[in-house]
Length: 174
Length: 148
Image (cartoon, rainbow over all chains, first blue to last red):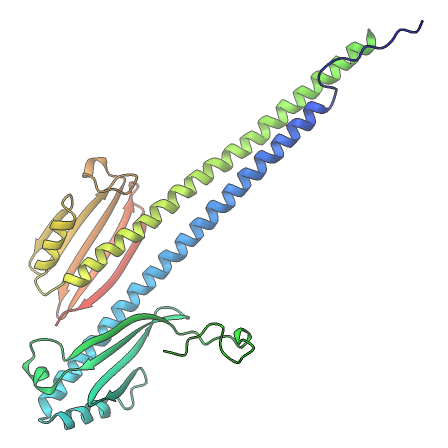
């Protein structure tokens, strides 16, 4: 009678190595994923830090521009006696200035400029020029800030133009 | 019997290889996890530093005048633990934060925000720097405000 071979219960040779390999693969995969994720978060924070720094540098430059405008308006207000001549003088003063725009609406004169933050964003400032008498008083600034906002200055890529001719990323209201 | 002995030797060898591989990979993974943890701490610190610096800057921008009295009052109200020194047209403030970026006393601090304001002519120059406990700069803001 042939003696039957008894099979050992439990693990066979090689199965523990397979198990360990699987566990290690999982461990390495999760470790790598968490490391990549942490690095991405850090890069994003760095980007935010750079953007914030650039924003406040642009804010500082905008404040310098406001100071220059206020000085010009104060000087002009001293030289002119009527609202009309004052407005004409302001428009004439900024006629050749490419960074500051002048426009009037219902006899109110506005000045606007955009201070770049980076290659795609800027701070848009819109000022309403006060009446001549208020400027002459010198109690406060010769302007009132009407708008102070961050805008996108980047021109839309032609590839982002949708089928109906409109921009997918619309920036036309600025 | 000889066959059984051979199988045991192979199994033992396999266990040894498994343990070696496991320890090797574990060492690498632990190193990766430690790096990840440190990066997460750096990210958290930087994010909070940006937020705190922005808060302080906006308080200054909304209150700055030629004598900085309003700014001084605002700092005393919003940062009671701050070390404030107001002298004419200049103001300095040191703020201390613990590891969770909550305001604390200087002795317990892990982070320090140095705020320096100088009024010259018609401008208030704002310098804010946030440092860690190794005196390394994490984040800084340099800007100015026009004062009529």
